[in-house]
Image 1 (cartoon, rainbow, N blue to C red):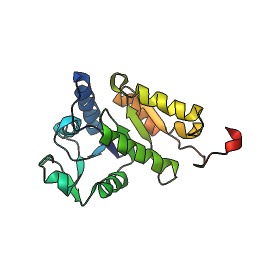
Image 2 (image 1 turned 45 degrees about the vertical axis):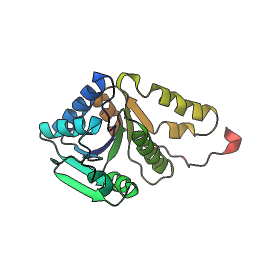
Image 3 (image 1 turned 90 degrees about the vertical axis):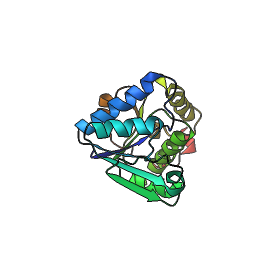
Length: 193
């Protein structure tokens, strides 16, 4: 695992622990020579994790659409900055440049990126590990929702296990390194529900 794409907020959140977790994850990645791939922002959780990786002498690849770069929210101190025409290209490049994915606390954008990368895995477009860094139980309600999808027959139980969770970067990345993708087709056999 040489690179991890981190999905996270353009805001810092209200709890100090969110930013602290971003710093801890960034430092851990740099110390273990894991490149950060992210949305190239210099604000919120994005800016915090990028700065943490850079300060620990790690490597950061930022990917940003030109309309966001024009709004001056782009981090200017990255080793690599890739500018795309739109959000779709941004997500495709981030996925291509990454060996794994971690979602940290964030808003709609983070949820969008997480849902899309999970869908791509479910469709067999990639078999890379996907993790939630569950800082202070931030993702507890989402995890319960995933379980509810299984219970109500909208998600195969094996696909539910594509989401790896831990509250600490070290534990999460260790679980992600041990991940084996499920051997199941996307479409559920309705007779087995």
